[in-house]
Image (tube, rainbow, N blue to C red; front, side, top):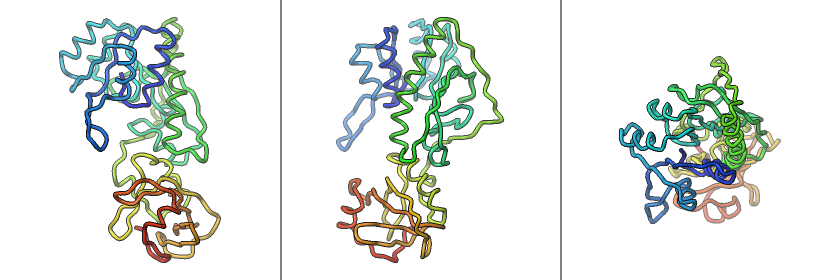
Amino acid sequence: MGTPEFAVPSLEILLANGYPVSAVVTAPDKPRGRGQVLSPTPIKSVALKHRLPVLQPESLRDPEFASAIRALNPDLIIVVAFRILPKEIFSIPTLGAFNLHASLLPKYRGAAPINWAIINGEKETGVTTFFLEEKVDTGNMLLQARVPIKPDDDAGSLHDTLAEVGAEIVLHTVRLIEQGKMVPRKQDDALASPAPKLFKQDCRINWNEPAQKIHNRVRGLSPLPTAFTMHNGRVIKLYRTQLTDRKSSGEPGSVLLEGKSLFVCTADNFIAVSELQQEGRRRMGVEEFLRGYHLTSGEKLT
């Protein structure tokens, strides 16, 4: 059970290792792109390529969906980046249902663990498999793998790394369950931290914060949902910034243009903006941006 690109490596590694996947469950097709063409989810595309049955329930509590899962008589349900499963579904398989989560549980329970780990300046994260319980992300842990967060990682690059590492952990988890060698471990709730869904207010840059904190927010929100700031009522999205040792010399948010470079004052140092996007335009490097957007030193971003 899965929907986005993050789930694809896990399905592919199971198929490559000969595991009989009886069905794939994913979200309904949605209009995507500029033409709003009805398109399958990434995991459905893989399933169709391998001629696997695909279920796309509108509601996971639909009795017909539960009947369809029971009819498959599954040994195991594997969940990777899907919706919250009701107990009547995850209790069907004889060997249980487990989830792959993109953090070192119990840290970063919630919908956006990759983003929040970078936003909070973590130097390490990882993946965890755990048996499903009714309370989200709290079930007994199975396997974990640690992954360093590199200084130049953003949410996109870390997502891709964790998807690949996660696939290996999913395969190892399945093998140990199959062999009856898995020893689940309880989570320590006292060590838990949240990774809630990101909203627009989480994405707006506060230039009164230190440069490192702003830099981490930009990294943690790039490429999606993307950090942003405002200039003369227009939204400017920020995809990439660089730290400098240069002390700020103006109000937080005030701009300094030097040659082909764009610097912004923060609570301590100037931060350099290297990739951004004005409203209604495409993402671009700062040099190209400054050729087509009127911005002068001393103006403020808010």
